[in-house]
Image 1 (tube, rainbow, N blue to C red):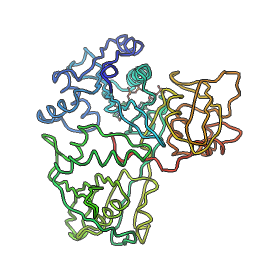
Image 2: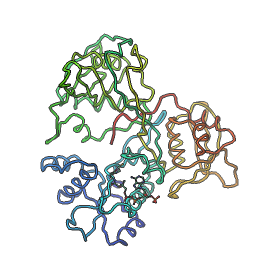
Image 3: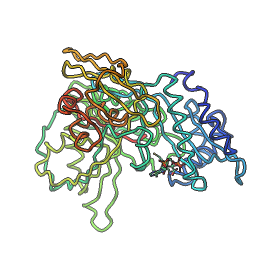
Image 4: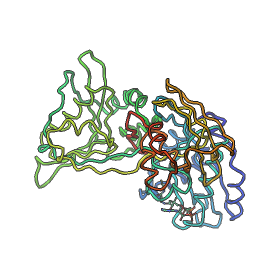
Length: 431
Ligand SMILES: CC(C)(COP(=O)(O)OP(=O)(O)OC[C@H]1O[C@@H](n2cnc3c(N)ncnc32)[C@H](O)[C@@H]1OP(=O)(O)O)[C@@H](O)C(=O)NCCC(=O)NCCS
């Protein structure tokens, strides 16, 4: 996020709503005096324990350049503890054939003592307006609960799957690439992860770049990291010597049946098909491991075509990466389209940030122009901003949304063909 955006003024409506209740609002990432209580409140909001001083210092060092906001109630017994929090930064979001700078939102909490008084509505509504004014074409987040963000115009654009795999039942039926697997130290893994992730991200709609500090959480490489010693890191190197993948996991000993222990896969990043196959083959063939659990998987995972018995995996799918378009022409023009067409979209926005009527024209070469259309032009499709955001990555068909009563068109199949993508969207981690 540029300095200007990072320091962008608060939305005046938001400030008026918050001060009207007798509260104040300010950025917390300016000093440890403000940041430590802010971080403690976020921990409490997400059911974690109070961070240690070492962890608070590490958090400050890694996050002081982000936009971290607190709302404060001077009447509380500990007035330096915010009663609501929100963190944001500029993230690079991959869309089919391109990318967008997204206003990524995280650390959204409202204190249980102040819940359901409209604080989230004021804070998030205000920040989305600020983001739109600062030129972000889209906002994004991952959620603790599905029911919260639809009213703000967000929808799940990339789903994710979790799997529990019985490894002895699964049986490997996939490729057996040459190349080698080696253990790394956590620091070595940390050093190569970002390049690998960026290689994967470039081709996978729904992924965002990692914040630098977030890699330390993956590898337990920051001061005071909990349970870091349990993490194991392996890499895959091609026969030509190129490092093309890594996996981070822990093992949980089964005290009743030692040879039937469990492996929890925290991250795998495979930048080539060989790395993908080699790492999964390794993980599914470890001695003493009877079960592998993994999350952040695609709903369209190649692994299911590489095992002999698919029913060895119990797979569940959930909503994961929520997007919210803030500028319809900019968002639509950023992606690639598989066909030439011209459609007029009528987009309703519950927060009045990005709605209107727009003409989208795509060419044989896949480029697009999108511009506001006159209200006298009849729309080919009517939908909400959340539904357009859901379709942007190609993860849901317009036919499905029409069947769900969320999109209206005389020809939803045409809209579905226009927005279809050839790569199933995925965000492989939480933020
Ligand atoms: C989720 C949370 C931030 C909501 O804050 P809040 O200040 O109570 O929310 P508001 O009062 O502004 O509510 C705004 C709207 O969202 C709805 N809403 C709030 N929390 C909701 C929830 N958990 N599920 C469904 N709807 C919810 C409200 O009913 C209200 O709806 P309406 O305006 O359409 O009537 C707060 O409950 C919280 O901190 N939860 C624990 C941490 C968490 O899960 N954070 C979200 C991380 S993604």
